[in-house]
Image 1 (cartoon, rainbow, N blue to C red):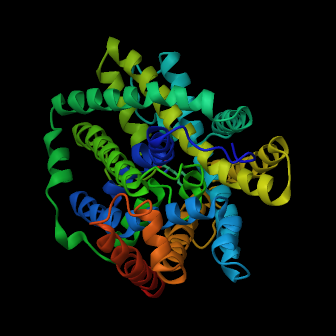
Image 2: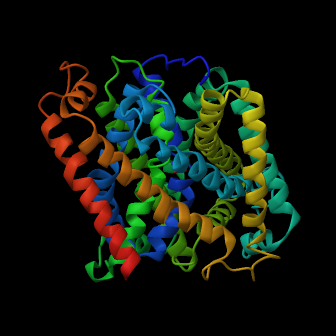
Length: 444
Ligand code: PHE
């Protein structure tokens, strides 16, 4: 895909690829547990604002740079600002996706393992403690992580177009359908309405700097921003495609999916009397409980569900690997095969440490956090906002307004009325907002 600078087949293909990158474990696994840790509905409220005021402008900024610059971060920046230091931003966009991929693949592995558990009928009896036992063990999560990383590398090696794109067209709608089935079923469980209340009735006193920073980080994580993914994908978009529309559709479907996941998980959490604030294990504890309650149908739904999660995770993990591969192929002249294998292996090795940090290496702490949590926080609380801030500053202040207008309105043929508002978001609101949250996060 990268070497010959192909373009996506059309607007739909571009939106699907971007939505495929955006919708993933961030929505199904990360969003529900962050809601649970950060005060329920109040977090969702802040998240909505973060999505549209801070995250969406970054999407536009990355898309402008990618499509106009026509390449990976290094070459795009070099083309748009020749001889400047901006191209070194490419370093963030090579390192961050690989760091992210390392722990993303560990969680991707959890879904591989759960698919296996579903197929072997392990969600039929008492499921309590199932996640704790799995995660603290050594070999099972490591094997699953290895399988997931191998899948990711295989797809990138085989090329994205014919495999995963076609596959995604079927499985993404299936995932939506299944999650709705689970939402509806969850709502019939006794005691589930407390969970609904938790999601819709905000307690504003819960909002603090930490909650705002976490919501911002999650918006960036969920929309795949600040690490060059959207930039790279936008470079494969055709000139006549509307990037503002693509961004808006991607953000809306991503948001809808996260909310559905929240409604699939929280009511069941309350019905089961599980603690909503327990962290990364939330979904992997709760869903098996729901499936075990569904009796016969539970196994079928569980298989389809974890299969779909796996696909959703894969369409995101390949976008993480593609950024680094595009860089090595285009800038260093490496073959696609060599780039893929080297990067996947490096990421896998880091992932091993992440996986072990729940069990045998739990005592190894970096800045008070286990390795997995440390990498997650480094990426979503720091690197993604930093990348996002720099992208908006570049488009808002380094590029000429005429060029930005040309790119966002496709030479004046669309979005003419909203360009002014979009530009203000990119030039002022988003960078100021990100900088404020960043600084307060640093100082408080
Ligand atoms: N957005 C993806 C998810 O929600 C994760 C991701 C982040 C993918 C950054 C690519 C780049 O699962």
